[in-house]
Amino acid sequence: MKKERPVNLDLSTIQFPAAAKASILHRISGVVMLVSLAFLIWAFATSLSGPEGFAQVESIMTSFIAKFIGWGILTALGFHLIIGIRHLIMDMGFWEELDSGRTSATASIVISIIVSVLVGVWLW
Image (cartoon, rainbow, N blue to C red; front, side, top):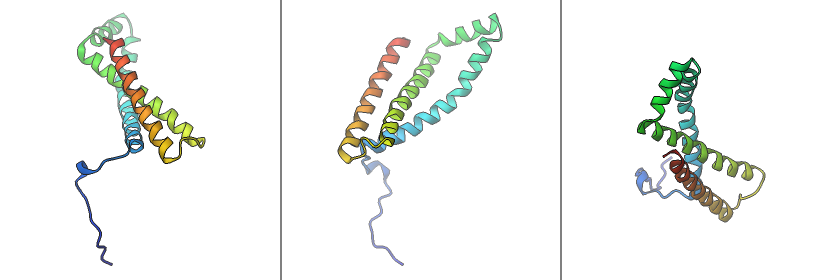
Protein backbone atom coordinates (compact mmCIF):
# COMPACT_ATOMS: atom_id res chain seq x y z
CA MET A 1 0.00 0.00 0.00
CA LYS A 2 1.65 3.21 -1.22
CA LYS A 3 0.69 6.47 0.45
CA GLU A 4 1.09 9.64 -1.58
CA ARG A 5 1.27 12.17 1.20
CA PRO A 6 3.89 14.79 1.91
CA VAL A 7 6.36 14.03 4.66
CA ASN A 8 8.08 16.88 6.46
CA LEU A 9 11.08 15.68 8.44
CA ASP A 10 12.48 19.15 9.14
CA LEU A 11 11.26 19.77 12.70
CA SER A 12 12.49 23.38 12.65
CA THR A 13 9.70 24.28 10.22
CA ILE A 14 6.89 22.93 12.41
CA GLN A 15 5.06 25.46 14.60
CA PHE A 16 3.73 23.81 17.73
CA PRO A 17 0.64 25.30 19.40
CA ALA A 18 0.98 26.79 22.89
CA ALA A 19 -0.69 23.77 24.50
CA ALA A 20 1.85 21.42 22.91
CA LYS A 21 4.75 23.61 24.03
CA ALA A 22 3.37 23.68 27.58
CA SER A 23 2.94 19.91 27.63
CA ILE A 24 6.42 19.22 26.26
CA LEU A 25 8.04 21.70 28.65
CA HIS A 26 6.09 20.15 31.54
CA ARG A 27 7.69 16.80 30.77
CA ILE A 28 11.14 18.36 30.39
CA SER A 29 10.82 20.18 33.71
CA GLY A 30 9.86 16.89 35.36
CA VAL A 31 13.01 15.25 34.02
CA VAL A 32 15.11 18.22 35.19
CA MET A 33 13.64 17.90 38.69
CA LEU A 34 14.31 14.16 38.72
CA VAL A 35 17.95 14.63 37.70
CA SER A 36 18.40 17.48 40.18
CA LEU A 37 17.35 15.20 43.03
CA ALA A 38 20.81 13.60 42.98
CA PHE A 39 22.45 16.99 43.62
CA LEU A 40 19.89 17.99 46.24
CA ILE A 41 20.13 14.71 48.14
CA TRP A 42 23.93 14.94 48.16
CA ALA A 43 23.81 18.55 49.42
CA PHE A 44 21.26 17.65 52.11
CA ALA A 45 23.17 14.59 53.31
CA THR A 46 26.50 16.42 53.35
CA SER A 47 25.11 19.44 55.18
CA LEU A 48 23.64 17.19 57.89
CA SER A 49 26.82 15.17 58.36
CA GLY A 50 28.32 17.77 60.68
CA PRO A 51 29.67 21.32 60.88
CA GLU A 52 32.38 20.58 58.32
CA GLY A 53 29.87 19.23 55.81
CA PHE A 54 27.58 22.19 56.36
CA ALA A 55 30.47 24.59 55.76
CA GLN A 56 31.42 22.69 52.60
CA VAL A 57 27.89 22.89 51.16
CA GLU A 58 27.59 26.53 52.19
CA SER A 59 30.82 27.42 50.39
CA ILE A 60 29.65 25.60 47.26
CA MET A 61 26.21 27.23 47.30
CA THR A 62 27.62 30.75 47.28
CA SER A 63 29.32 30.33 43.89
CA PHE A 64 27.77 31.61 40.67
CA ILE A 65 27.46 28.14 39.16
CA ALA A 66 25.62 26.79 42.20
CA LYS A 67 23.25 29.77 42.18
CA PHE A 68 22.63 29.21 38.47
CA ILE A 69 21.92 25.51 39.09
CA GLY A 70 19.62 26.45 41.98
CA TRP A 71 17.83 28.93 39.75
CA GLY A 72 17.37 26.22 37.12
CA ILE A 73 16.01 23.75 39.67
CA LEU A 74 13.59 26.30 41.16
CA THR A 75 12.52 27.43 37.69
CA ALA A 76 11.80 23.82 36.69
CA LEU A 77 9.88 23.31 39.93
CA GLY A 78 7.81 26.46 39.42
CA PHE A 79 7.07 25.66 35.79
CA HIS A 80 6.15 22.07 36.61
CA LEU A 81 3.86 23.24 39.42
CA ILE A 82 2.07 25.88 37.34
CA ILE A 83 1.57 23.69 34.28
CA GLY A 84 0.64 20.77 36.57
CA ILE A 85 -2.13 22.85 38.12
CA ARG A 86 -3.30 23.67 34.58
CA HIS A 87 -3.39 19.95 33.75
CA LEU A 88 -5.34 19.20 36.95
CA ILE A 89 -7.90 21.86 36.07
CA MET A 90 -8.19 20.36 32.59
CA ASP A 91 -8.71 16.93 34.17
CA MET A 92 -11.72 18.40 35.98
CA GLY A 93 -13.24 19.32 32.61
CA PHE A 94 -12.31 22.98 32.27
CA TRP A 95 -10.19 24.65 29.55
CA GLU A 96 -10.59 21.68 27.22
CA GLU A 97 -11.87 23.67 24.25
CA LEU A 98 -9.41 24.93 21.65
CA ASP A 99 -9.58 28.64 22.53
CA SER A 100 -9.61 28.25 26.31
CA GLY A 101 -6.85 25.61 26.13
CA ARG A 102 -4.68 27.92 24.04
CA THR A 103 -5.33 30.84 26.39
CA SER A 104 -4.63 28.80 29.54
CA ALA A 105 -1.41 27.40 28.04
CA THR A 106 -0.19 30.85 27.04
CA ALA A 107 -1.11 32.30 30.45
CA SER A 108 0.64 29.41 32.22
CA ILE A 109 3.82 29.93 30.21
CA VAL A 110 3.78 33.70 30.88
CA ILE A 111 3.20 33.15 34.62
CA SER A 112 6.04 30.62 34.67
CA ILE A 113 8.40 33.11 33.02
CA ILE A 114 7.44 35.75 35.59
CA VAL A 115 8.05 33.26 38.42
CA SER A 116 11.41 32.35 36.88
CA VAL A 117 12.49 36.00 36.79
CA LEU A 118 11.33 36.54 40.37
CA VAL A 119 13.28 33.48 41.53
CA GLY A 120 16.37 34.83 39.76
CA VAL A 121 15.99 38.20 41.48
CA TRP A 122 15.50 36.46 44.83
CA LEU A 123 18.62 34.28 44.41
CA TRP A 124 20.92 37.07 43.34
